[in-house]
Amino acid sequence: MVDTVRTIEDILLLLADNTSGDISPQDIRDAVVSLEALSPSVAVHSTVNSGAADDYYTNGFYDCPVTDSNLSDASPTQTHGTASTGAAAHAIVVASAVGTTDTGTLVLTVTGTSIDFDGVPTPGDTEIVVADCLSSATNQYYETVKSWLGQVTYTLSSSTGTTFAYSFNYGFAAYEDFGDSDFILDHFLFEWLGAATDAGFDIDFHHHKATGWTYHATAFSAGPAPIYKLSTDYLTDKSLISGEYGRWKRSGLSIPVDGSGSEGIVIHVTTTVNNSLRWCHCSANVKIQPTTA
Image 1 (tube, helix red, strand yellow):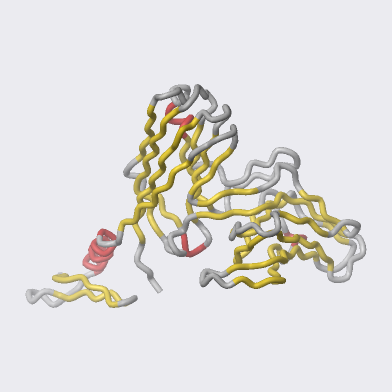
Image 2 (image 1 turned 90 degrees about the horizontal axis):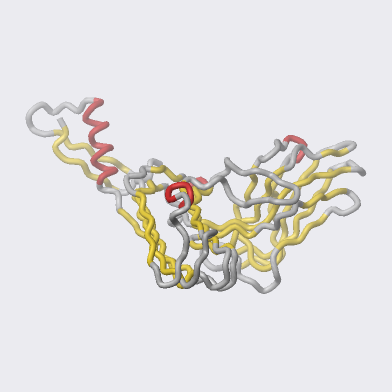
């Protein structure tokens, strides 16, 4: 029977009591539960203040054109972003389908100025975002490991082909992963104050991950389908009204997020009337999970 559970860096120590000196498989399971209960809880707080009717993000963002890119041997490059801006976001791709080439391999790369988490930029950096465009599936999501500043350039190239093509949605994605940590989303709370009537007001809570994306040639909606949506819970009783407060809370969620594996959370606030939202305060509480390796 376990008397004490302790951790030293990445080592889990199970100290037996003086009665039996034995540790059973059930004792190990109970110890893991005890360790998870001791995992630190972290809250992230942010506020959205809207002006023009638009999409607003916090704890990350999606910045993607609604139309796709159609690269080919005749036009092999596509730019995104604006010079001198500090997006510090991953470059992404959502494939239309497999690419085509008359011969050889087909690769999509991203070039620009990368930025690491030590705050060091690398101008002229390059990363392969799709290593084999010939094996892409419709709606398949790709993301660079690196984050990028300013403007990036997507370049399609074939190893030996002279006629090739590849269509995809593209843009930037940034998300809260609590320092590349795995965590459990426990609960969230949104509170807001209206400044004008807006029946189109909505909030989407995204679990950012590689699945759940949908390619579209002319009306791309960035991000996986939201795991929680204000209008789904409140139906029509979620309008902004001048001088009226609103509140949306979910608790006991237990949503695992693989922050060490390019997952995170993104909050998307939509207004459809200019200056209809005075402010929207967002908070999300998570439990950081212990490392296992």
